[in-house]
Length: 165
Image 1 (cartoon, rainbow, N blue to C red):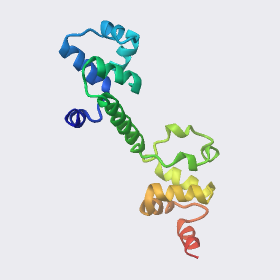
Image 2 (cartoon, rainbow, N blue to C red; image 1 turned 45 degrees about the horizontal axis):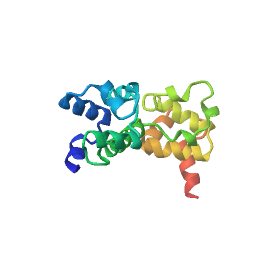
Image 3 (cartoon, helix red, strand yellow; image 1 turned 135 degrees about the vertical axis):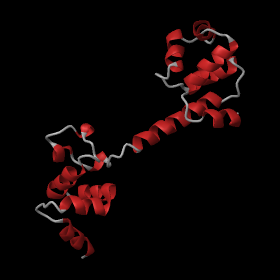
Image 4 (cartoon, rainbow, N blue to C red; image 1 turned 30 degrees about the horizontal axis):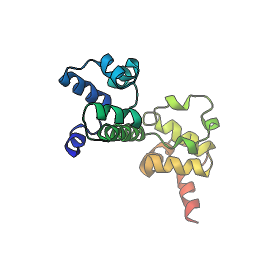
Protein backbone atom coordinates (compact mmCIF):
# COMPACT_ATOMS: atom_id res chain seq x y z
CA UNK A 1 0.00 0.00 0.00
CA UNK A 2 2.77 2.45 0.83
CA UNK A 3 4.05 2.20 -2.74
CA UNK A 4 0.59 3.03 -4.10
CA UNK A 5 0.21 5.90 -1.63
CA UNK A 6 3.64 7.37 -2.37
CA UNK A 7 3.13 7.05 -6.11
CA UNK A 8 -0.30 8.70 -6.19
CA UNK A 9 -0.14 10.96 -3.13
CA UNK A 10 -2.06 14.19 -3.79
CA UNK A 11 -4.02 12.82 -6.77
CA UNK A 12 -7.79 12.53 -6.48
CA UNK A 13 -8.65 8.86 -5.77
CA UNK A 14 -11.30 8.96 -8.50
CA UNK A 15 -8.56 9.22 -11.12
CA UNK A 16 -6.91 6.13 -9.65
CA UNK A 17 -10.26 4.34 -9.57
CA UNK A 18 -10.85 5.15 -13.24
CA UNK A 19 -7.41 3.77 -14.14
CA UNK A 20 -8.01 0.60 -12.14
CA UNK A 21 -11.39 0.02 -13.78
CA UNK A 22 -9.87 0.57 -17.24
CA UNK A 23 -6.98 -1.82 -16.49
CA UNK A 24 -9.43 -4.52 -15.44
CA UNK A 25 -11.76 -3.82 -18.36
CA UNK A 26 -14.70 -2.97 -16.09
CA UNK A 27 -17.27 -0.35 -17.10
CA UNK A 28 -18.32 2.19 -14.49
CA UNK A 29 -22.05 1.47 -14.61
CA UNK A 30 -21.90 -2.29 -13.99
CA UNK A 31 -19.23 -1.75 -11.35
CA UNK A 32 -21.37 0.83 -9.54
CA UNK A 33 -24.39 -1.45 -9.58
CA UNK A 34 -22.30 -4.40 -8.36
CA UNK A 35 -21.36 -2.50 -5.19
CA UNK A 36 -24.83 -1.05 -4.68
CA UNK A 37 -24.05 2.52 -5.72
CA UNK A 38 -25.54 4.86 -8.26
CA UNK A 39 -23.56 5.04 -11.52
CA UNK A 40 -23.68 8.85 -11.31
CA UNK A 41 -21.86 8.71 -7.98
CA UNK A 42 -19.01 6.62 -9.37
CA UNK A 43 -18.83 8.84 -12.45
CA UNK A 44 -18.62 12.02 -10.34
CA UNK A 45 -15.85 10.46 -8.26
CA UNK A 46 -13.84 9.31 -11.29
CA UNK A 47 -14.10 12.83 -12.75
CA UNK A 48 -12.87 14.36 -9.48
CA UNK A 49 -16.11 16.27 -8.90
CA UNK A 50 -16.97 14.39 -5.73
CA UNK A 51 -15.04 13.21 -2.68
CA UNK A 52 -14.69 9.52 -1.96
CA UNK A 53 -16.16 8.85 1.48
CA UNK A 54 -14.75 6.10 3.69
CA UNK A 55 -17.72 3.73 3.40
CA UNK A 56 -17.66 3.83 -0.38
CA UNK A 57 -13.86 3.54 -0.43
CA UNK A 58 -14.13 0.32 1.59
CA UNK A 59 -16.73 -1.12 -0.80
CA UNK A 60 -14.58 -0.30 -3.83
CA UNK A 61 -11.40 -1.65 -2.23
CA UNK A 62 -13.12 -4.91 -1.32
CA UNK A 63 -14.56 -5.35 -4.81
CA UNK A 64 -11.24 -4.57 -6.55
CA UNK A 65 -9.13 -6.55 -4.04
CA UNK A 66 -7.19 -3.48 -2.93
CA UNK A 67 -5.63 -3.12 0.47
CA UNK A 68 -8.14 -1.75 2.95
CA UNK A 69 -7.86 2.00 3.44
CA UNK A 70 -5.70 2.73 0.40
CA UNK A 71 -8.31 4.80 -1.47
CA UNK A 72 -9.43 6.49 1.74
CA UNK A 73 -5.83 7.50 2.42
CA UNK A 74 -5.51 8.85 -1.11
CA UNK A 75 -8.62 10.96 -0.47
CA UNK A 76 -7.08 12.26 2.75
CA UNK A 77 -3.82 13.19 1.03
CA UNK A 78 -5.79 14.88 -1.74
CA UNK A 79 -7.76 16.87 0.85
CA UNK A 80 -4.52 17.91 2.54
CA UNK A 81 -3.10 19.08 -0.79
CA UNK A 82 -6.27 21.08 -1.50
CA UNK A 83 -6.19 22.70 1.92
CA UNK A 84 -2.53 23.64 1.57
CA UNK A 85 -3.20 25.23 -1.81
CA UNK A 86 -5.91 27.37 -0.20
CA UNK A 87 -3.46 28.54 2.45
CA UNK A 88 -0.89 29.41 -0.21
CA UNK A 89 -3.29 31.83 -1.89
CA UNK A 90 -1.45 34.60 -0.11
CA UNK A 91 -4.29 36.18 1.76
CA UNK A 92 -4.24 37.50 5.29
CA UNK A 93 -6.46 35.86 7.89
CA UNK A 94 -9.76 37.37 6.81
CA UNK A 95 -11.42 36.41 10.08
CA UNK A 96 -9.30 39.11 11.73
CA UNK A 97 -10.28 41.87 9.28
CA UNK A 98 -13.68 43.52 9.61
CA UNK A 99 -15.72 43.58 6.41
CA UNK A 100 -16.68 47.17 7.16
CA UNK A 101 -13.03 48.09 6.69
CA UNK A 102 -13.46 47.22 3.00
CA UNK A 103 -17.06 48.37 2.67
CA UNK A 104 -16.62 49.46 -0.94
CA UNK A 105 -15.26 46.20 -2.34
CA UNK A 106 -15.79 42.46 -2.26
CA UNK A 107 -13.01 41.12 0.00
CA UNK A 108 -12.88 37.83 -1.91
CA UNK A 109 -11.88 39.74 -5.05
CA UNK A 110 -9.03 41.72 -3.55
CA UNK A 111 -5.65 40.91 -5.05
CA UNK A 112 -3.70 41.16 -1.80
CA UNK A 113 -0.33 41.40 -3.54
CA UNK A 114 -1.23 43.76 -6.39
CA UNK A 115 -3.25 46.09 -4.16
CA UNK A 116 -0.97 45.88 -1.14
CA UNK A 117 -0.32 49.62 -0.84
CA UNK A 118 -4.02 50.48 -0.79
CA UNK A 119 -4.79 47.67 1.66
CA UNK A 120 -1.97 48.66 4.03
CA UNK A 121 -2.95 52.33 3.94
CA UNK A 122 -6.60 51.57 4.62
CA UNK A 123 -5.90 49.24 7.52
CA UNK A 124 -3.41 51.63 9.13
CA UNK A 125 -5.77 54.58 8.70
CA UNK A 126 -9.01 52.89 9.82
CA UNK A 127 -8.14 49.54 11.33
CA UNK A 128 -7.94 48.48 14.94
CA UNK A 129 -4.86 46.99 16.65
CA UNK A 130 -5.76 43.39 15.73
CA UNK A 131 -6.19 44.28 12.06
CA UNK A 132 -2.90 46.18 12.02
CA UNK A 133 -1.12 43.21 13.61
CA UNK A 134 -2.52 40.86 10.97
CA UNK A 135 -1.42 43.17 8.14
CA UNK A 136 2.03 43.44 9.73
CA UNK A 137 2.25 39.65 9.93
CA UNK A 138 1.07 39.19 6.36
CA UNK A 139 3.07 41.87 4.55
CA UNK A 140 6.20 42.15 6.72
CA UNK A 141 7.71 45.48 7.72
CA UNK A 142 9.59 46.39 4.51
CA UNK A 143 6.40 46.31 2.45
CA UNK A 144 4.51 48.25 5.12
CA UNK A 145 7.16 50.95 5.37
CA UNK A 146 7.16 51.27 1.58
CA UNK A 147 3.37 51.61 1.46
CA UNK A 148 3.16 54.02 4.35
CA UNK A 149 5.94 56.19 2.93
CA UNK A 150 3.25 57.53 0.61
CA UNK A 151 1.66 59.12 3.68
CA UNK A 152 -1.26 58.40 5.97
CA UNK A 153 -2.64 60.06 9.06
CA UNK A 154 -0.78 57.73 11.47
CA UNK A 155 2.68 56.89 10.13
CA UNK A 156 3.99 53.39 10.70
CA UNK A 157 7.07 54.65 12.52
CA UNK A 158 4.85 56.22 15.18
CA UNK A 159 2.89 52.96 15.37
CA UNK A 160 6.14 50.98 15.78
CA UNK A 161 7.28 53.30 18.55
CA UNK A 162 3.98 52.91 20.41
CA UNK A 163 4.48 49.14 20.46
CA UNK A 164 7.91 49.48 22.08
CA UNK A 165 6.61 51.64 24.95
